Image 1 (cartoon, rainbow, N blue to C red):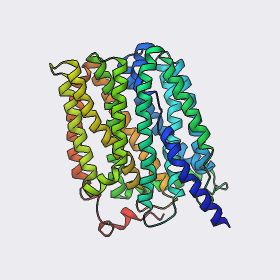
Image 2: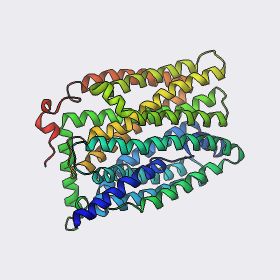
Image 3: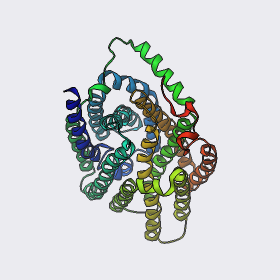
Length: 425
């Protein structure tokens, strides 16, 4: 009887997940006009807007272990609901922010939201899929559908936010808040899977932290996981930085808020395409997939900066920048799903949330470092030169990273050492 109940819960979760993920993976309406809203309406400097992302990343690092403890204590379903509530609070704080200090407080609540959701959402899906041979493929398809829908919806709302911004800058933020409330309501419909969410009430927090620390040490002993986690952090930090640079670059060359939003929508669609075809990309490049993503991203960043300082007409520059960022965002869409899938390979339910958690720490640690560096560069030069420098640095790092990962990832199961893929503690 318990098995039948769990089967129904799994089906309900898998059915609901794509719809939920489509509106909750990130904030809709907001990012297309975020830079303009904070610099034009709130009169906050461009470097401070970039800097706030570094504070967000720092909070994510600090909150990752407490979030992991919370998820184990109250379960993935309740954690997902709570994360969405914090997202609503964040958007309210953004509407009332007037300076960098206010933004830092808002970013703290955003970090509360995503330090929980980044682990609980994907863990909830992973635990809802039965232990079958093609579990990884099922995960990719369900997560891919949700991500693909998110990027397409994000493209539509980005265009709308550009037009709405010209009417009243606060309308897109209000729209984002309403969507966040709907996501919170949808998350209530998830079911906790009984055999994956038992709460060990007899554990003391101190004992749990020791257990978590041992798990992290065990994960970092795996050459395979360590390589993937470093790669994930560098790629994510770079994606976040150049995403902010895009709006700043277009504003520098005189592109209006409406066209900024339209371009955000188009590159958002490219992310959706990347999400949709990530399985095809994986089958095409196999163990070279991560290298292909990093190399093409580095080239596109560098070209964006070079074209940004060219003498071509602003509209021509805008078109080229849009093309380059379509490639970058397509890579980002594929990267998000493939990394989650690769990290979950060879795992079990007890270690998986901890793998996602340490990956979250890595992503945000690198995002913080890259964000601080990107903010500093923007204070001493313009956006186009900042992109050129970023492209050169990322290109050098990519070459070193590919060399490091060559003998540590993308191998056949029999070619790995025991400690690389067996996670029994």
